[in-house]
Length: 218
Ligand code: TMP
Image (cartoon, rainbow, N blue to C red; front, side, top):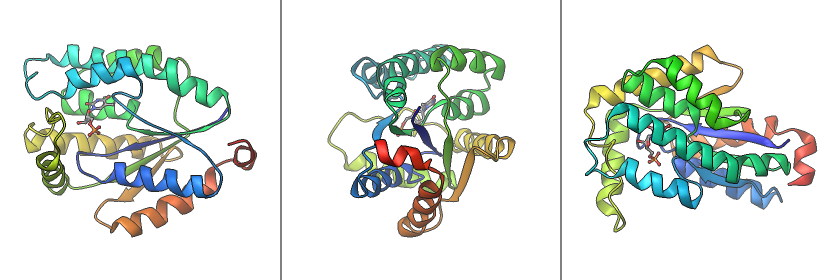
């Protein structure tokens, strides 16, 4: 099996920049990781993503939203993540199951047992080896995310950015709780640090954790 690293955090925390930097660093060392994201990562899941993030879909019920995330994940795991891990690759994924717990359980208030059951079904035995939580004040993250959305010419993926601050504060607290509950899997990074400072910590920690055997096959 390969090595599965997920990146998590509130809107605008900087995780997408960090995942790209990490993938470039690994590539420079001859390690060609699979870089992917949720929701999305394959054509069918990308179609589900556009439903989930479209600001016009304000009427999506919390349960419909949850099931769409689970459906997208099931397809993504089947098509992309499982085959890559079985081929011995390193997979870097921008959000995964912890996002569903943080947003749909801590954020929306859906019963955790329902989410755990759906995650088990969608993941088909796959679970992250390492999860990097870029912890960030939602007020700062949302301001960054809104700037990015204003600057983009593509579809406005802003359904969550339009949620009230209290929602994002529950999501942040949820992520912090998940990290405290599983300290051996989570690495918590202070998102208030500079891009370079955050990357120095992430790269050192990841290079130390990737199993030696994997470095040769990637
Ligand atoms: P992002 O690609 O900008 O991170 O946007 C994905 C959005 O989807 C973000 O607001 C978090 C949300 N999300 C959930 O609510 N549940 C999930 O399971 C996942 C993967 C993402």
